[in-house]
Amino acid sequence: MPAFTPINLNTWERKEHFLHYHNRVPCSFSLTVKLDISSLKKKGLPVQPALLFAITQIINKHVEFRIAFDKNKNLGFYEYLIPSFAFFHPQTQTFSTLWTEQQADFNAFLTQYRQDIALFGNNTQLEAKPNTPDYVFDVSTLPWCSFESFQLHLPMGNDYFIPIFTLGKYYPEGNRTLIPFAMQAHHAVCDGFHVCRFINELQQYLNNF
Image (cartoon, rainbow, N blue to C red; front, side):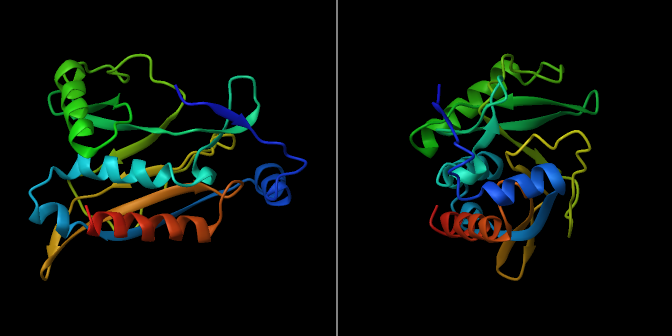
């Protein structure tokens, strides 16, 4: 289980920004881009688990995306996060959430990912794999359409700081394969600079996957 490190608000360099965008002008924002996943397709890698693994590597590089309130409402950040992802059930036209623990390399992650689907994929409850830990980030996939923009509306989510990701249907464009990628972030803990850096580093990671 990852450590949770409290943040001293009085000495935090982001104190003014946090108080402004959490207390006075609470807001989140989203950015949608087209990621180039040509390297994944050329290597025959399964797209969803590869993207989950790549996102996990980048999110765990940057503390601003691991900030949260713990159960006692203490502000702090997790040592690392793991992905929670949506799994669709055609028979009921509903989805369930599964989560996979962090692994040292992609092959180990892929093995665990497939084991989680085999064990819990037929469970149509919302939380298919029980006991979802606090240190997860959420990823949804919309494989039925590509989109230019995607926004979530979280009227009760002002205390939720961990980013949320949405993937669309990938498609060919010239000699590349692109996938819509939306990232929802809370302005109290990060700015456009941090989100753009995240996306640029994610693309670079995918290029070298």
